[in-house]
Image (cartoon, rainbow, N blue to C red):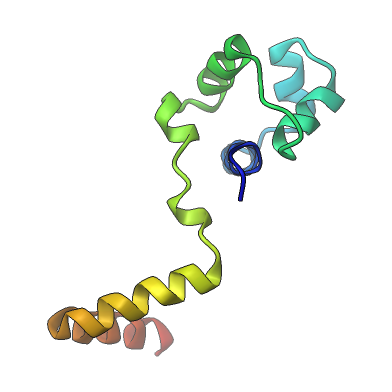
Length: 104
């Protein structure tokens, strides 16, 4: 996934966690809501000054906007888990117990 799309997805995720509307963020940035929509949908990057304001509004440090680990594809996640489980028996048992606890 390209950086613009990942950044937009992350901004949207953080905005929704804080129960803020796109219109509210656009108003705070003093931009048209359509321009904000373009940021969240990975069509365009925010200007540097707006990126700073987005961090303030969402109460996140800049690096928090660029944390995409949780946005991995399901296939990537399964692959990574498979590698972890195959390389460490103790960790495999721990993961199994954790997942079993969640299922019960």
